[in-house]
Amino acid sequence: MAAIADHNHDRKVMVVDINKARIDAWNSDRLPIYEPGLDEVVKRRRGKNLFFSTDIDKAIRDCDIIFVGVNTPTKTFGRGAGCASDLQYWEATARNIVKVANRDKIVVEKSTLPVRTAEAMEHILSRHPKHHFEVLSNPEFLAEGSAISDLENPDRVLIGGHQTPRGKAAIKALADVYAAWVPKERILTANLWSSELSKLAANAMLAQRISSINSLSALCEATEADIDQVAKAVGMDSRIGPKFLKAGPGFGGSCFKKDILNLVYICETYGLQQVADYWRQVVLMNDYQQERLVGTVIRTMFNTLANKKLALFGFAFKANTSDTRESPAIAITKMLAEERAQIVITDPKALGHVAEDLGELASRVKTTEDPYEAAKDADAIVLLTEWDQFRGLDYGRLYRGMRKPAFLFDGRNVLDHAALRKVGFEVKAVGK
Ligand code: UDX
Image 1 (spheres, rainbow, N blue to C red):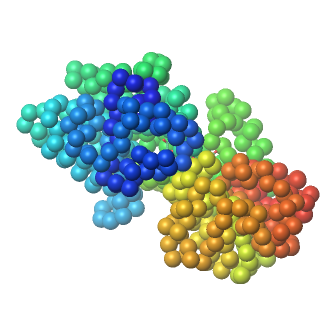
Image 2 (cartoon, rainbow, N blue to C red):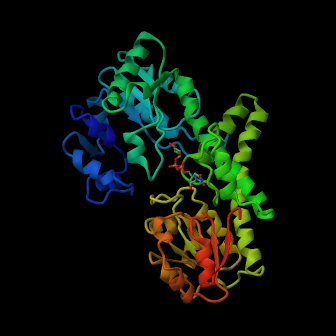
Image 3 (cartoon, rainbow, N blue to C red):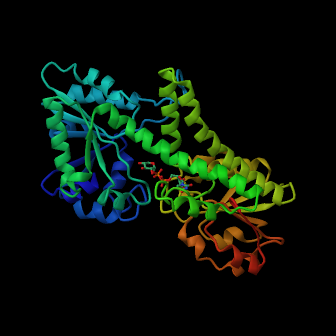
């Protein structure tokens, strides 16, 4: 919304949420999330044509286009638990729009939703005796850590809607918002269901590439192949391309796992068991990669971690974000703690989430923003997030502070392994 406000000075953008603390943070000098470049955009437009408020009803009345981006977590109860999306917040929002709206509105699905959700929403929205609500799907493809540049220069903007006169007019109204800065040929229109499915499909196929390269990293470790060399050779095939082929501790983030499980559930609902099994395997391979990494740590450290000190470098699910949702570091920390290792976590932005993410375990885990302090007297370093900060460290200083033999597990293959070995580290890396 900040990017839309930044490129459409003549439009008023209101961001509303039921969470007052969060809205207060958006109105303060400390935004509630860390995202490179976001502070500048918000500061530029806040109070001019970008407003943050908890007055949801006023925003529904004032605005012509309503973007709904409420959370759609994986259901934890009832039918489809563990797979299907929990749509209760979406439905409550749709009901509130019907209750409050004073004229026709365009309602845009911004949350990632199962295919044909728009149908259910239309059903609720069509209850209004006087006003018409045209539902569009406009999935967001930005990635965290590069959100602002992804928004500034998107590969495509996708708008799905009904191919009726009203549907087409709504599509045009939304396309005009993006046309302020996105070249016309990158604004793609589709029918509603294609648009909804495209978001799930894009995330599933991105995650599938990661599981594919991670599966091969296991084979590399068993042979003399090197996963980075394999990824480079494979990625230079222009049909495959070089992106999303980096082996690591498995994908995290709020989207990939949730969206794939959602896809699995939808396939099962339509009786497409083989298709469901195919996609579920992408998630199973991701879990396996994390178990495998922990297995390597245990085996290398003489089959016991009890009372050994491990320094975990990185807790965020990827670099340049404070987000830890579904971070591989969470599952890996839990598995290492079960082996009774003493764990110290260091991360430049994400330590604030450790307590909540680890629950009871958090009291047994230490945290510090200083990587040298984390590594002090440790038996091993396990690198899980590819922060630039970790690349620039003084390896000799780290090594000198540690117990010997000192191990380093590079879960992201981002460090200079030859230089690490030179100062004395015993190095293990993914797919090497
Ligand atoms: C993803 C999609 O990229 C984005 O289009 C969608 O809108 C939301 O979900 P995000 O989860 O923010 O974005 O991050 P992304 O960069 O896709 O990374 C996801 C996970 O995959 C991270 O844990 C990352 O470390 C991992 N990853 C990514 C790899 O392990 N290897 C790679 O080559 C790329």
